[in-house]
Each structure stands twice: as C-alpha cells, then as structure tokens.
Length: 437
Image 1 (cartoon, one colour):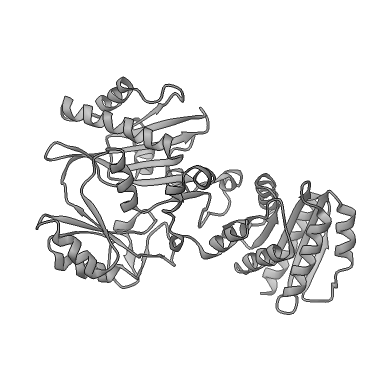
Image 2 (spheres, helix red, strand yellow; image 1 turned 120 degrees about the vertical axis):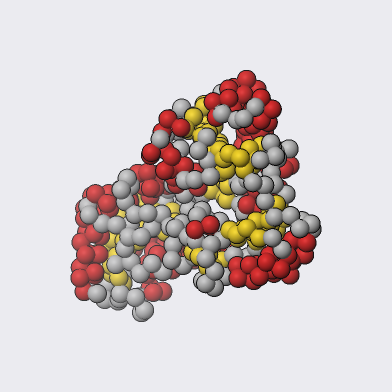
C-alpha cells in the first residue's frame, strides 16, 4: 500500500508503479480533481462542517465577498489544483497563495495579484498553473489540527481511513519521521464505517472531550458516505481541526474522482472539471480518445492498451532509455488520430519514437497505414527515427506497408518484431540523436 505522497494527490498511476525509479509524471489525467471551493460545497452538501467559504473570480468580486464576512478575520486562498500553495509564489511577484486578511480592501489587493497569474509550487513545476479564482474563508483559529483521508488500498482491496493527530503539515513527513502517529483503518465494503469504529478512531486521535469525539466520528462517517456515493478516489482533509471555540471543522479539502465512473455515473461531478488546470496537450488528446501523459524522458512511446504501455515503458527503461510519455491509442487508430498522436509525441522534442502495437481488435495493417500517413505529414519538417513493432492481426500486411514507405525522407521507420530488440534499437537511435544534438 502507498497511502501517502503522490497517491494522496491522485498523481501516481500504474505507469509510475511499473517504472519504479523511472521518470516523474508531470501531469496525470485518470483522476478528476476539483477546486477547493467546490470541494467545500460538496462537503457541506453532506452535512460536513467547514468554515464559511465563498469563491470570487475577480478582484472586485473578492472585495464584495469580503464585505459579507462582517469584519471578521478571513483567509484568502488561490484556487489552483496543486499542493504547497502557501509556500508557492506567483509570477506577479506575490509570495504565497494563502494569506490571512482583515479587510475587503486587502481581499481586493491580494486577488488582483493572484487572479490571472500563475502560481508556482513544488507540484506545478517551473511553468506554474493559472489562478482563475480565489476563495475567501472565515478564519477559525484551531486549537489542534488533525489529518484525515479516505483512499482505496490495493493490498487489502478495501477503502481505508487514514488519520493522524499531526495534521496541518506534510503527511509524507509524518509517515517518515513518526509512522506510529498514523492510524489506518480498513472499511468493510458491505458494512461501511459504523459509529463505533468511527468513535474508536476519534478517541485514538485525542480530541479534547466527548463532544468533539462524537463530532469527529460523525464527520468520518459522512466523509466515507461522500467517498462511496461519488466514486471518489481520494478524500483528503488536511487539516481537520478542533477550533478554539470547540467545533470540529474540515479546514481544507482535496477531492479526487475516477474519470471513468464520473463520465458514466456522476454527471454533476464531471461538470466541475477545470481544463485550465490540466495540460493542454492531454486535454486535446482526450478529445480524440487518446490517453496521453507526459513524462520527462526523450523516447516517445505510442501503444494500444494500458498494459502494453506499461510493458513498453518498462522495457525501454530496462535497456537504458527514458520514456517521454505514456500514449495509448486504444482500440482504434485512424490517420487523423495518428497525426494528433505524432503531434503530441513531437511536442516533447523526443530523440526517437517507439510504436508498439498489438493487433487484436485493431488491425496491425490499418495501424501501419495510419502510421505511414502520419509520418508522411511530418517528413518534410522533422528528422526522426521510428521503431515500429506491429504484431498480431495482419502483421504481414503491416510489414508490407512499412517496407513501401519512402525511407529517404526525414522520417525513417524501422520495423522490428521482437520486443527486446525493438527497445534496444530505439534506445540506441535516441542515444545517437542525442549525441548529434
């Protein structure tokens, strides 16, 4: 089980698991994440207590929203889908994406420096991520902060509730420095999270009185109900706080959902997606039914099927190369989809391309035809080697199509039918291209 780090932010997928110490994923698209203010609304719809929170999408709107708080202390938070906002910085020069404010004028001034600018954090990379809104929340000083998360545990194949009395900080650091401070509770799929189990967890966390223990237990049960009913992959509350006025509140929330389930069963959640927070290439790929995830290597990989994608990246790594991406064309690959796939692959400036397709549902011959058409479309502008391993249904047709391709152009296609040989060749070609650069 990997309950911490990337898993909590829905950034670790099967590709990174199979690649062990391989390239870091820059962006992941399997799991839908939503903004904090939307997460707070969803928590409230389940009767979960949070500080009063209202979004604003302009500086003037932030000013008007702040006036509604009636002079109470407030927190203004940049709405960007990335962790570490408080320690980040804006390209406008503003330090920090979370600030304590007292007046509507301060809200307006901070919003001006946040909205329309990019926030750079450890998770966004140097390019940052655009901030299109802020959230103003009432300041509720905590007496103590806790950590709570609901996740799916691969090992037990059950949902688990993870809790710690050391909240408000990096749970990864807590796990490393004081693992005993983390309580992991598997939840039976049939019975759910019962009152007694929730109360036992609350008692272990050490709330100040029986009243707060019951409030916390009630919150755990409602969080699990949300997790189950909304097809969530992650419900992370950091911190959950016992406020100085004696209330148990979810002060911050990160919610993630399974894309496939959302598209079919959760249309209300699907509407909450913010494509401005996603990589534009990955968004474009999705419009053509392609699954595309950027990595930081220099060998572009085009495959059909997630399992083959992982095996392809693994064999590239084993032979000393670094994949530049995870690109799954799925069960179909017409010429237009293949051209888009090439555009996406080339956007990372790869040194070589590896096309590894098994003809099952899709015909290898048809893939070869689409591959050749796509290669022709870029041959005048690009010099690159493509190693093509097309096996299975109609592989003899695929071989003939590739043999007829004009190898005198800037693009050269090398048909190789053994997987390990193909991987060795593409790594070698990438090495040579890198040496020439």
